[in-house]
Image (cartoon, rainbow, N blue to C red):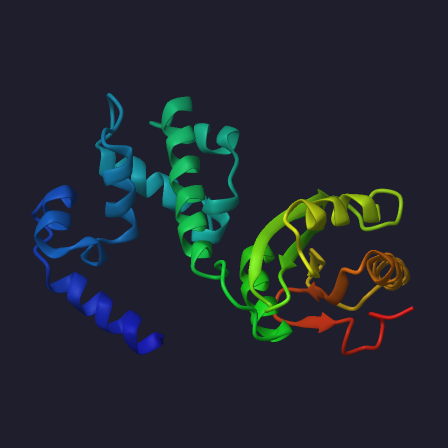
Length: 235
């Protein structure tokens, strides 16, 4: 990755800087543009006092890195000279679209081969979330993914994460098996007592309904835990 970044920077430096960003994009492709130039293309215009490139530079300087920019609120963006509500909303929409495009290749309808496959995909999707998300993956008897659904957002406990909400979706799409995934915003996937009790309850309900709980995965920032491998996907 470092080598690729150096090559990209070398290429960018070779592209004439006198050409306007949009023209550079058309002639040399999107990867030839710096972060400042990409933002200027997105912003389109500057303010009465500053060129669009200057506004883009102010935007980059306001945040330590692109991740911080991604997390910025509309209100925080509007504090930057030259960025009003419309531009702030457009920036947020563009960032979200980029995130969705990046995540779209992580998990597609198809055959699930292992818990590890699911965990890696979901770690990418859930890594920046500030709250716990419980997601159900509904599968048929051939381990083919029928549907992915977010069941709820919030702390995992038996009152909020009721089995009926999970199995209602399974029945609706005629699923034979389910895999549950939820994130720990702390980054540490170690299961809590509630996580374990909840998993056992879902397993028991699934057995009665004839819908098997294949696994319950807890994902952190860089690692995950399979409660099936831990022996918790049982009564």
